[in-house]
Image (cartoon, rainbow, N blue to C red; front, side, top):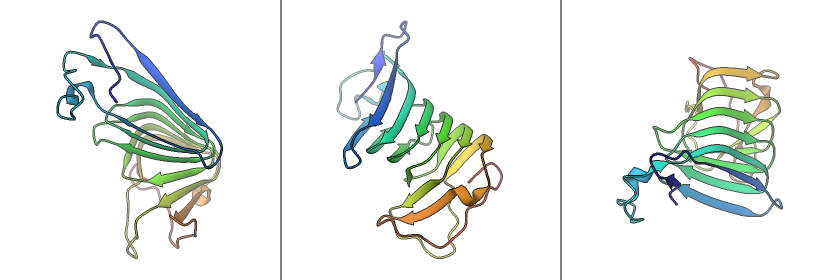
Length: 168
Protein backbone atom coordinates (compact mmCIF):
# COMPACT_ATOMS: atom_id res chain seq x y z
CA UNK A 1 0.00 0.00 0.00
CA UNK A 2 0.93 3.65 -0.19
CA UNK A 3 0.37 5.95 2.76
CA UNK A 4 0.21 9.40 1.21
CA UNK A 5 -1.43 12.72 1.76
CA UNK A 6 -1.61 16.08 0.04
CA UNK A 7 1.73 17.89 0.03
CA UNK A 8 0.43 20.63 2.36
CA UNK A 9 -1.00 18.21 4.96
CA UNK A 10 0.96 16.27 7.57
CA UNK A 11 -0.29 12.78 8.23
CA UNK A 12 0.93 9.89 10.34
CA UNK A 13 0.05 6.30 11.03
CA UNK A 14 1.04 3.64 13.59
CA UNK A 15 0.95 -0.15 13.39
CA UNK A 16 0.57 -2.57 16.28
CA UNK A 17 0.64 -6.38 16.33
CA UNK A 18 -0.83 -7.82 19.52
CA UNK A 19 -2.53 -11.04 18.47
CA UNK A 20 -2.50 -14.71 19.26
CA UNK A 21 0.97 -16.22 18.98
CA UNK A 22 0.27 -18.01 15.70
CA UNK A 23 -1.47 -15.10 13.92
CA UNK A 24 0.50 -13.44 11.12
CA UNK A 25 0.18 -10.09 9.36
CA UNK A 26 2.13 -8.87 6.30
CA UNK A 27 2.33 -5.26 5.15
CA UNK A 28 4.28 -3.66 2.28
CA UNK A 29 4.60 0.14 2.21
CA UNK A 30 5.78 1.93 -0.95
CA UNK A 31 6.96 5.53 -1.20
CA UNK A 32 4.34 7.70 -2.92
CA UNK A 33 6.84 8.55 -5.64
CA UNK A 34 7.10 4.84 -6.54
CA UNK A 35 3.35 4.24 -6.88
CA UNK A 36 3.19 4.23 -10.66
CA UNK A 37 6.13 1.85 -11.14
CA UNK A 38 4.55 -0.54 -8.63
CA UNK A 39 1.27 -0.50 -10.56
CA UNK A 40 -0.58 1.30 -7.77
CA UNK A 41 -1.43 4.50 -9.63
CA UNK A 42 -0.01 8.00 -9.81
CA UNK A 43 0.97 9.43 -6.43
CA UNK A 44 3.99 11.53 -7.40
CA UNK A 45 2.31 14.77 -6.26
CA UNK A 46 1.54 13.31 -2.84
CA UNK A 47 3.69 13.33 0.30
CA UNK A 48 4.55 10.15 2.23
CA UNK A 49 2.79 9.87 5.55
CA UNK A 50 5.00 9.43 8.59
CA UNK A 51 5.01 5.99 10.21
CA UNK A 52 5.29 7.04 13.85
CA UNK A 53 5.32 3.59 15.45
CA UNK A 54 5.55 -0.10 14.70
CA UNK A 55 4.94 -2.23 17.79
CA UNK A 56 4.99 -6.02 18.05
CA UNK A 57 4.03 -7.60 21.36
CA UNK A 58 2.40 -10.86 20.17
CA UNK A 59 2.02 -12.67 16.88
CA UNK A 60 4.07 -12.42 13.71
CA UNK A 61 4.52 -9.16 11.79
CA UNK A 62 6.14 -9.09 8.34
CA UNK A 63 6.71 -5.41 7.61
CA UNK A 64 8.40 -4.25 4.40
CA UNK A 65 8.79 -0.50 3.91
CA UNK A 66 10.45 2.06 1.67
CA UNK A 67 9.70 4.84 4.18
CA UNK A 68 11.18 5.86 7.53
CA UNK A 69 9.71 4.72 10.84
CA UNK A 70 10.00 6.97 13.90
CA UNK A 71 9.99 4.15 16.47
CA UNK A 72 10.00 0.34 16.31
CA UNK A 73 9.37 -1.71 19.46
CA UNK A 74 9.61 -5.49 19.81
CA UNK A 75 8.61 -6.86 23.22
CA UNK A 76 7.47 -10.36 22.26
CA UNK A 77 6.27 -12.14 19.17
CA UNK A 78 8.17 -12.06 15.88
CA UNK A 79 9.16 -9.11 13.70
CA UNK A 80 10.45 -9.51 10.16
CA UNK A 81 11.39 -5.94 9.21
CA UNK A 82 12.61 -5.28 5.67
CA UNK A 83 13.62 -1.75 4.79
CA UNK A 84 14.89 -0.15 1.60
CA UNK A 85 18.48 1.05 1.80
CA UNK A 86 17.36 4.68 2.17
CA UNK A 87 14.80 4.03 4.93
CA UNK A 88 15.71 4.49 8.58
CA UNK A 89 14.30 3.79 12.04
CA UNK A 90 14.55 6.67 14.51
CA UNK A 91 14.56 4.51 17.65
CA UNK A 92 14.73 0.71 17.71
CA UNK A 93 13.60 -0.80 21.04
CA UNK A 94 14.34 -4.51 21.51
CA UNK A 95 12.90 -5.97 24.71
CA UNK A 96 12.24 -9.63 23.87
CA UNK A 97 10.83 -11.72 21.07
CA UNK A 98 12.25 -12.76 17.71
CA UNK A 99 13.90 -10.44 15.19
CA UNK A 100 14.00 -12.11 11.77
CA UNK A 101 17.13 -11.02 9.92
CA UNK A 102 16.20 -9.85 6.44
CA UNK A 103 18.91 -7.28 5.81
CA UNK A 104 20.68 -4.38 7.46
CA UNK A 105 18.48 -1.93 9.41
CA UNK A 106 19.71 1.63 10.00
CA UNK A 107 18.68 3.36 13.23
CA UNK A 108 19.60 6.50 15.15
CA UNK A 109 19.08 4.89 18.56
CA UNK A 110 19.33 1.20 19.49
CA UNK A 111 17.86 0.30 22.91
CA UNK A 112 18.14 -3.31 24.11
CA UNK A 113 16.54 -4.05 27.48
CA UNK A 114 15.90 -7.80 27.38
CA UNK A 115 17.01 -10.94 25.60
CA UNK A 116 16.34 -10.99 21.86
CA UNK A 117 16.48 -13.87 19.40
CA UNK A 118 17.88 -13.02 15.99
CA UNK A 119 16.48 -15.56 13.55
CA UNK A 120 18.37 -16.35 10.35
CA UNK A 121 16.10 -17.87 7.72
CA UNK A 122 18.84 -18.65 5.21
CA UNK A 123 21.71 -21.07 5.62
CA UNK A 124 24.76 -19.23 6.90
CA UNK A 125 28.23 -20.11 5.83
CA UNK A 126 30.65 -20.81 8.64
CA UNK A 127 32.68 -17.81 9.83
CA UNK A 128 30.53 -15.33 7.92
CA UNK A 129 30.30 -11.77 9.26
CA UNK A 130 26.93 -10.04 8.83
CA UNK A 131 25.95 -6.47 9.61
CA UNK A 132 22.52 -6.68 11.27
CA UNK A 133 21.89 -3.21 12.68
CA UNK A 134 23.71 0.07 12.04
CA UNK A 135 23.17 2.62 14.84
CA UNK A 136 24.28 6.10 15.84
CA UNK A 137 23.81 5.52 19.61
CA UNK A 138 23.10 2.40 21.66
CA UNK A 139 21.78 1.67 25.14
CA UNK A 140 22.18 -1.85 26.50
CA UNK A 141 20.77 -3.14 29.77
CA UNK A 142 23.56 -5.72 29.77
CA UNK A 143 26.23 -7.10 27.45
CA UNK A 144 25.99 -9.01 24.17
CA UNK A 145 24.68 -12.11 25.97
CA UNK A 146 21.20 -10.65 25.35
CA UNK A 147 21.49 -11.67 21.69
CA UNK A 148 20.76 -15.27 20.68
CA UNK A 149 21.19 -16.62 17.14
CA UNK A 150 18.57 -19.10 15.92
CA UNK A 151 17.85 -20.81 12.62
CA UNK A 152 14.38 -20.79 11.06
CA UNK A 153 13.46 -23.93 13.05
CA UNK A 154 14.34 -22.29 16.37
CA UNK A 155 17.59 -24.18 16.93
CA UNK A 156 20.62 -22.35 18.31
CA UNK A 157 23.32 -21.41 15.83
CA UNK A 158 26.92 -21.37 16.99
CA UNK A 159 28.58 -17.98 16.73
CA UNK A 160 29.05 -14.69 18.49
CA UNK A 161 27.73 -11.16 18.25
CA UNK A 162 29.99 -8.12 18.38
CA UNK A 163 29.72 -4.36 18.15
CA UNK A 164 32.09 -2.89 15.59
CA UNK A 165 32.07 0.72 14.37
CA UNK A 166 28.41 1.36 15.26
CA UNK A 167 27.26 -1.98 13.85
CA UNK A 168 25.98 -5.18 15.42
